[in-house]
Image 1 (cartoon, helix red, strand yellow):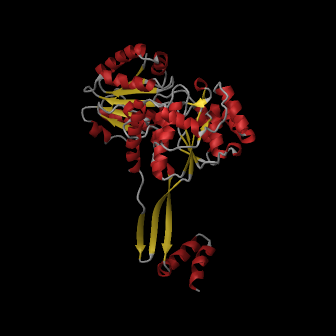
Image 2: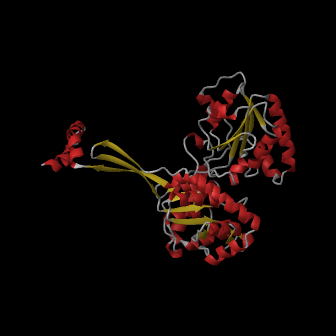
Image 3: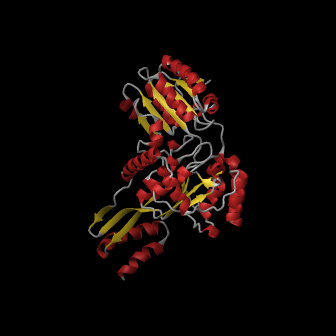
Length: 434
């Protein structure tokens, strides 16, 4: 069912490791043309385009794109009590963890009267996308909204596809969570058109353009985010989820298999990877995967994910090589199930979120750990970070010099501006001392 990659006895270079990591055969560029057409349609026809796209792509035509407050209130009142309690606790935990991501302002005194003030300014308005395809994701509402609120974002618009099963309304659980978070600006729109609407605005429904669009979605959402970059900021081009587990002989094969399957049920293109120096463990995990794939609810989806080119059991000579492979893979989710997970952690450079030990499964992070589950996929953890309060903050340097402090560097500026053949730069300083 799942392929085995045997790297024992090899010493691949960093470039060779990058070529060896398993990846799904997805390419955002193939969706760019369709995404561009949908965005252009929204820019040209506004609400009418969004309604037509919902009818064609979501198989339902909503009464309106903007969700009435009464729908949000009804959803909050009808929320299952257990889900209500779980959401409130998740909000509390994510808010606490997000608060730690907001740096304090700092002032650096370079000389008497010469100061650089480092401040962190929140984006004024953001658009948060919550997908609604294979599953409903109320947890994504929390993961998008709470960091933005914690960062100090003043205006938040939330978009999620209308659901045929609910008469064209946004899924009631998503609406309920939005209501619990105090979000009143919600739109029933999905896919690339929704991303374009958030970025450029739709005057007919009172949707003002946002400065940043965040949240996961399918390949068309990812393509749309690439296309609107420049008009608005984005968090990342999210792709199919992935999990990589580093494990040794001390790990429990049943737990590893359960964790791999938990992510495989997201999508047929989900990547599930075990890297281990113990062949007996790999064999036991493979057997357990075969059993679970037959009995889990989304059996066909899980089997497709485990059988795909993006999933593998990787055999290495030692845990140091396992860490090197993981760093090349750049997992969205990394689990470390070894005898000394803290020691392995010291070897890790690239990962979206890291889960240490047998009692910290990835599914905990998907919901109630307090960490954020909007994370870089497809190896993007090698150069980018997951969603957090810092996503919505812009560092700004404020320069404050007295006349005396400016005089102290006057000649330095003159020397440098002349060296760069930009004498007017120096003249702007000299003008203050005429």
